[in-house]
Length: 284
Image 1: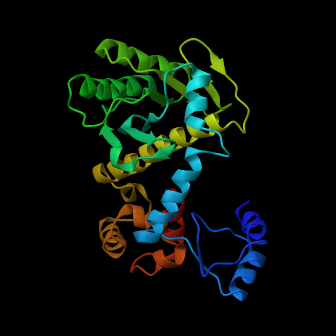
Image 2: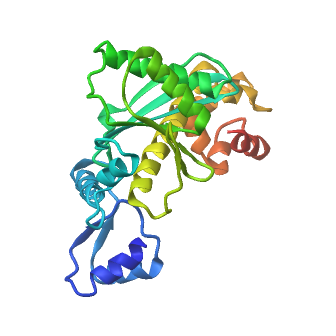
């Protein structure tokens, strides 16, 4: 889609010296055309150019084709506003290294400075984990210990059970904020009173999906960090003893970097043969 847009957009416009994109367009023919025209194509990861891309995305999401997705969401849910949304998810491994994520979106865009995360009790119960996470957030708000404004809407990653657990926590603490859930299987929007099956191209559904997916990503990322802090998964890999483990971490710096390493990179570590490297790659 991005590649097609570039061709159409610049069919009647002068090409710039450089294009800043949020991601690679992935089209070899378009890449060859832009290169031949002397256009530099960059996907900036930091600095001024990255901020320009972020600003462009925020502007686009605030008014998608003339449609205010936050306003559309508020209207569809019959709530006062949906400009500030917080998303929640939990992640664990059979109850181990249980964590919760709390992400924030403002006017349809991620507000990463307002992200929060929390270690949870180790229990293999998604409902209890969600209840604990929402109770923590609600208590901080009610007691004035959270420096963020109260949101217009809470989005729970899950179904009816997760939503009921969250609403129980909110009621127990006394924090009056609307809460809904978004179930992954059929992308059903669940409220305390009813369920919605909005069209897949509905802008307000896309907004909820971005919040839900980001909460999930942030929870999984934190879970991996906590899990690796408590007990590195390298300890359970056949063929990796204490010395090999030490050399791997010394070479790559962290379990996360070992996880991202190729077979070739792994076999460059003394004591790691091809078979062990393949096992490490598979297990991690």
